[in-house]
View 1 (cartoon, protein in one colour):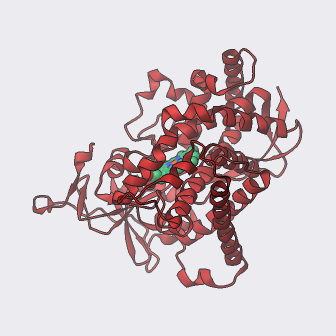
View 2: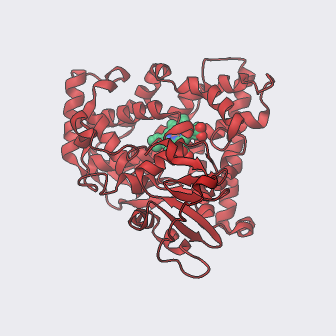
View 3: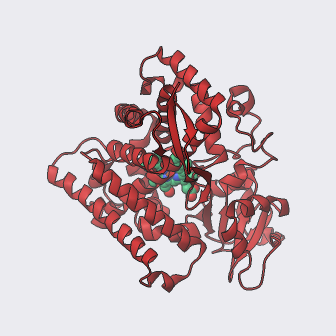
Length: 456
Ligand code: HEM
């Protein structure tokens, strides 16, 4: 399947079929209840009914794309924009003027502004901060004590994103505030996405009040960060300077709202996604002691027993494969949506202009049609001699095309470094009260992972 399989629907393509309706729709709510009850199982079962299937969510028809090839074609095609239920719910958080929710020429200009901070050759400058934060974790943890993996993972993700991209003295208190706010806001956003009850979310219920307070504090924090940088008169070579100096299409400085929304649009996906992935990495290290031991042995042999550093990351093959395999089974971004700009053809089906399209990297990355032993945790499937067996686009946790995550190298480097640093020092066991079952929100993460580190 190539991008050519996405075409505008012209008279020549009017023989296109309408995708079948997925089974199980009930009057009024359609598939909504099944989706809300068990979204992962629901999305994973759709491929049995077609490469593209129609879903009814209340009065709305949504098109679900179920094959790796068609999700790749969808993501690579300019005929589909960033929109749909996920993005509508995120706009309340990310603002309308940031890179994650913009489309067209504004989006291209914004990508040009932020891209240099994420280029492969920019990553080494973040090495010292990533090393410090990864080793900082192992120093905070004490053998035998219980680690709350949710807050620890958020903390390290927020600190790395803030310290690398918005250089400044980000006190623990500020990182702590940011991660607490983000956790509340993401919970509320997910609720608004799956249960779009509109005005009900404006009523003064405790959950709504908590959501409003966290969102207001998040915006206040971003204003503080921008104001502090301006007041300092400093212009370090970082993403915040790039945003403050950016010009619009007419060569004018970009507005305050856009700067604000850009900072939010970069900090928020940068923390929630990495934090969730760190939680799953800690979970797999506890659940698969044989791989934890292999990571430790590899780190020792690559570093010669010295503290692992940025310069070792490329040589840590098994560690990197553990990260990739953890992301395959538990992709932080488990659902993505798009909207058809015009009537379009995708995989021989007709998608009408304005239609919402949804697909699930989780379903794609766990499909038995793409992976032998699809539910097994098998990092060796990413060895060069086996990786070629994986169909194209069956493993795209950062997506592809013009909306691909700009931070793939930045994220992979920190995830490998954190995995290596914690595994070199500790093995992990579940602590009393731990619940590693999957919690579905805007990202996937364990419900409440509590681990006890033990020395090797
Ligand atoms: C495990 C870590 C991460 C994963 C799995 C991930 C995944 C993704 C995915 C799948 C998209 C594309 C969304 C789409 O196609 O609709 C995306 C977009 C984006 N990500 Fe990430 N991400 C991660 C970390 C980060 C980090 C650390 C940052 C920033 C510090 C970041 C910033 C962004 C931004 C700004 C976009 C929007 C890009 C655009 O629309 O042009 N992400 N991410």
